[in-house]
Image (cartoon, rainbow, N blue to C red):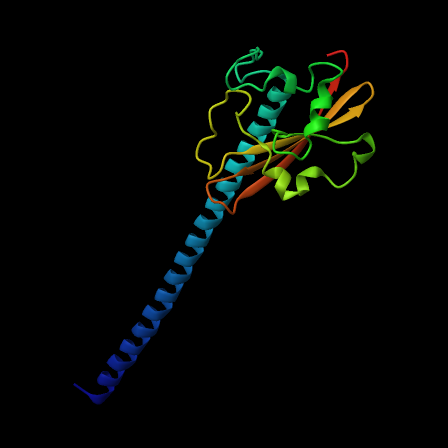
Length: 195
């Protein structure tokens, strides 16, 4: 064996070690990329779950305004899981007076009356204490709890008198599986006086 072949083996060993380090770094980078992609996908799925919960809660609030249950049947006096008839805003011309008396109090049960000139003013839902007074998903429609969320969605209904009827701004707050995933949606709901 000559001295040159020993050196060649040493260089080959060094090249193989460098090659293995480069492969290890590439593999580590690929693994980190895959883990990041999985984390982003989980967050997106959680956000979609919160968005679905918020949309379902908007529908639940509309059913509450109409005095209906999830199956479409009307709530009648004494039904469990329904808002008492005297607290429903579309019970007639005096329907919004209930909102007026209870705006911002613990008895508001997710309903609040706004003056007509306050339609574009700072919204009530920005006040965290009022969000604590919001109605929970299914509370007044006998709808079962929303599955898989960390906290049940809730809604606040603001009533406005606008001729020829009433406009209701529904604000919903919903969460996903993680408490950091929060979605807020708003919807306007018009009820004419002919309804």
